[in-house]
Image (tube, rainbow, N blue to C red):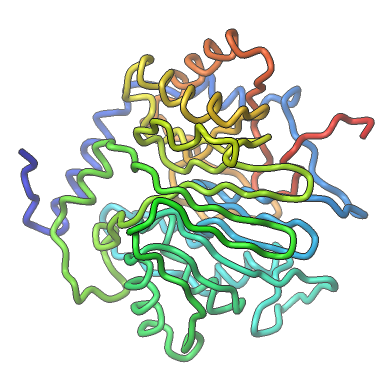
Length: 360
């Protein structure tokens, strides 16, 4: 039986206390792996006409393939003190970040650059704040179509109410959650959203079981943005395919279909270190091996806070995620899968998601 948490801020304080208890395992090996120059993925330099990706932390990505640009999650505000203070999208930070990413805005960027990319769509993988907080405002500022589950509809409504002067209309397509798949086609990128289970970690359970006010407004507690529809994303580009699995939930046979084969998989590892090696192996088998991915990039491992500085982008690596444990498991799994390579990627900087050889 799940006990319902009735109060408001005590839930977030309890969440913080739980995280502090978890500060018993370090992540030094993972940090060393992520920062090892021998693993470094080079930043794309112009002239370049192929597929490119920017990683913005958690499971947020900007994906561009020439004629098409899409954003996955687009969590940019990254507010501090999220457990004890109300949060809201930060339009100044969002606009500055989009300008640094060379995305066209409805209002001109302060430091305008030529050849800006039009953002076609913003997809939210589920409704939690670290995936959906900024998605509606990004769509509003860029004219992109907002795509996600019913929770996203609520967040979009609250966004328009909170920013009436800059966000009066949002192009959207809200998914009803009744289907297991949703398909979208753009000029050079095809997107298939696949319904998946969210991670059952204790932090997510606390968020889901916290009291909910249907009339919430920004700024608000993180617990007001519930999970809702949870999906993974398969992207088919001209040069190859990408699978984004944002949360380490229970995956079974969702990706055992040739339609979901991918060259590269961005694999969420948040809270995976608190499961068992057996469950991690099942997760690996049903994502990495099921999709026949050649490149595995761990994501959703950072602290979810701390605004990214485009001139010196870094992500804080938390102690509480037990990332060293996950890294050891993955390295062990790689011994049986010699065709698979585990890679870190640049933060905020553009890179080729298909990792061509230096001579290509």
